[in-house]
Structure formats: structure tokens, C-alpha cells
Length: 381
Ligand code: PMP
Ligand code: GLN
Picture 1 (cartoon, helix red, strand yellow):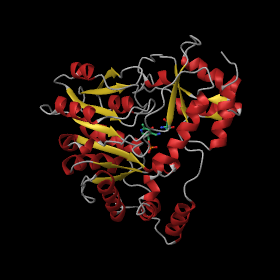
Picture 2 (tube, rainbow, N blue to C red; picture 1 turned 90 degrees about the vertical axis):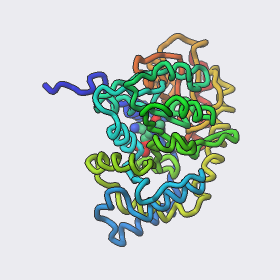
Picture 3 (cartoon, protein in one colour; picture 1 turned 120 degrees about the vertical axis):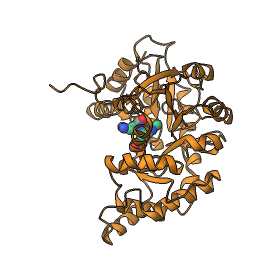
């Protein structure tokens, strides 16, 4: 019998809840993926490149014009320079970038600070590299960072901190103070940062996403992980990138080349053409702001309590004043009995801390959101 390297890990909650939603014919607001297609022009571009024979391996670190376009977009949106050739790596989804970045820096016995609730792939990546996750919980109710707790968690063994802004599942968006404080805390130590910024273009109420590399000290230490899945509604394409200074990129690519080697060639050429037009990603905030507002407006007619999400395409709701049922049981029961699937937030805590919160994904057509809201307004508790 194989001795498991991840004995506590089962099938991800996203797979479990999506299957349950399908089995129960429920509206799936659980797993985070858009319920609508990408722009048809993007289909045409991929078809074009496949027909024209762009069907063999791409260069290991990415197609040059695509890396260049990613660097140009980063300069345009954030005013920060990255060298397309030596500091941008194309990967098969942000999940790969996160794993490769963790693997590049974490050695057995190194401590890695994870801010909880945290995305489900972080801790397994740390553990598989022999690292020790050190969990620091975010402040309730807004899920801001408790910097005193982070400070006390830092030791001589701390090698890495993992950051996610805008935050999945809670929507918190880092402020300039957060960036400055992190920089102060790590400046005199050899601590790196893996920054998961896949929701960079989804922030609300006039908030701006601040990439960690917009801070000069953090830029030197950070692997910034992005995903085209969220930005262009193509989660099934599994294509993303890592931005990091050349020294870090050299180590990152050593891992990337043996994880996947390279990423689908026609997708890279198609996206390189598609992204030249900034309006194709700069309006994403407005697009999702409308959906968040519609969803939150409808939630007001339900018994749930909530604070509108600051970013990402997720909204969490609190039900502790209605029931003491565990969030996991409630999410399952709501899928079966009410016909709306959600994610219990406890799954994002290593010890399954249950704050009586459910996460809904509002990246769905408006009529689907309205139907779900009608169901959520029914007496249930
Ligand atoms: N990080 C976060 C916070 C996510 O929500 C997701 C996916 N939804 C990922 C990483 C993974 O992105 P990808 O699908 O590009 O691997
Ligand atoms: N990131 C998505 C979510 O949070 C799910 C991705 C996946 O299923 N692996 O729901």
C-alpha cells in the first residue's frame, strides 16, 4: 500500500460540490467558473492558429510575442516594467505557477506563512516540498490581515509568505498599508512572496488592485501568479503566467520545465492577438460590479447577513444567527433541498474552523443569479 504524501487530502470541495449540483439539478454557485462564454473572436483566433499549423510545442517559457504582450499589459495597467524574455513565464494555469514558485524556494523544514482562509492548493504545495505551513487567520469580519499575528509568526525558518489579493473566498483587497507593512516585516530577512493575483481585474466600488510588485522591495522578492481563466472567461484553457525578477524566474523555470515544460501553443498565439486591445480586460470590473450588485441586492431579501465583496467573483454570507448547523452540512443540504450549491468556507481552514459562512460564485448569467436568489429567499432555516 502506498504511504500517502497527503494523507489528509481528499477530492477538492469544488469537484464534490459541482458533482452534487449536477446530480441534484441544482444551480451551481459553488465552483468558481463563469457561466458564460468568452468573446467569439477568441474562438476564431484559436481556430485560425490551429488551422495554420501552430500545433507543436511552444518554447519552454512561452511564445515570445505572448510574453512580450503580458509585459506590455503589466506596464500599461500598473506602470511596472518586466522583461518579456527573462521575467515572464507562461504556465498551464495559475495553479501550476503557484506550485512551481513554492517548489522553487521551499526546502525541507522551511516555514511558510499561509493566511487563512486560504485557497486549497497552497498547503499541499508547501507540504509536498517538505515545508511546514504556519497558519495565520485573517481578521473577522472583513478578512483583513492581522499584521501583529503575522509578525509573531515569523521566525528564522520563515522562507515564504503566500498572499492572495483580491481574496478567494472572502473578497478582501490589499491596501497600500498592507503592502508597506509586509515589506517592512520581510526587508531584513530572506523571505520570499508568492502572490496569487488571479482576480486582479475584478475589484469593486472604485478599489484598485495593488499588485505586490508595485512596491519596489516586494518586487524583488515576489512571484506574481496570474490567470487568463478569470480575465477572459476561459477557466477551461488553464493558461496563466508568473512575473518575477530574473534571478527568481531562472529558478522558477527550472521547475516549470519539468512540471509541464510548456503551455498549449495555439492558445498563446490567440491570446497574444486578443490582449492587444486593453478594453477587453479593463472593463471587467464594471461587468462584475453589476453582477455583484445584483446578487447583493437580492441577498437583502434573504435572512443571510453579508458585507459586499471587495473583489473576486465570490460573495460570502453569514448564517450563524439562523442555525448552528455546520457550514459543510448546510451547503450539502441547501444543494439537495433548496437547489442552490455553495462552498462552505471552513474548507479553506486547515482545522476546518467553521465561522458559519458560505461562499457563492456570482460569475453567472443574470437570470441564473435571479433564479438562485428566488430560491434563497424561500423559508429554509
Ligand atoms: N488561485 C485562486 C485564488 C483561484 O481562485 C484559482 C482558480 N479559481 C486559482 C488560483 C487557479 O487558477 P487556474 O485555473 O488558472 O489554475
Ligand atoms: N478556483 C475555483 C474556485 O475557487 C475552482 C478551481 C478548481 O475547481 N480547481 O472555486
